[in-house]
Image 1 (cartoon, one colour):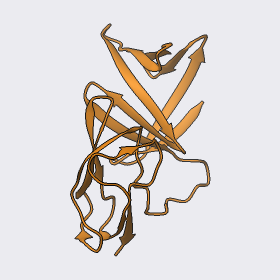
Image 2 (image 1 turned 90 degrees about the vertical axis):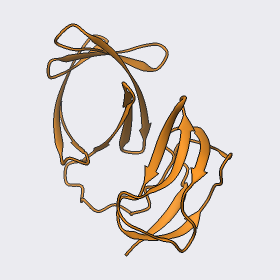
Image 3 (image 1 turned 45 degrees about the vertical axis):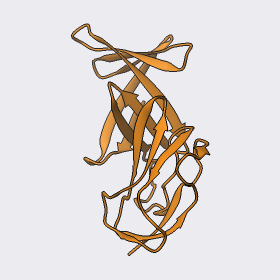
Image 4 (image 1 turned 135 degrees about the vertical axis):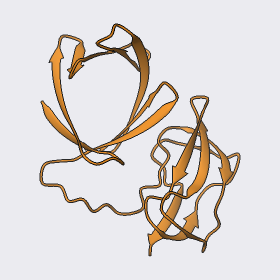
Length: 154
């Protein structure tokens, strides 16, 4: 199977082959585990464990302290999104809200910090815009996929 994902560094082409319970991504062998983690065997023999969370068409991959957002590009899909993709990647707790309604922000600005799976996740503005809503405050528990903030692109 051949998939294309959107990433901050541009499109990533991924060719995935499945054999039994294992998936092969290039030279990596990935095996789902019963606890929801993915065991990844590198071609050099080292093993990593990744956590995967799927929200809509977006896969959030947590591996070795890094978070990757992979958005599957459907064939024929447009590159426009609703701009309001400021959702919780997984269930967690709001640690900090760094913006107020009406505040202008530039792309890359951290808007909110969540704690999930004992890691901090920064919710970052994808585009320049104005914060039109903040749905949660520090200390609030949030469910995966809920809208955390709304941003109107400028």
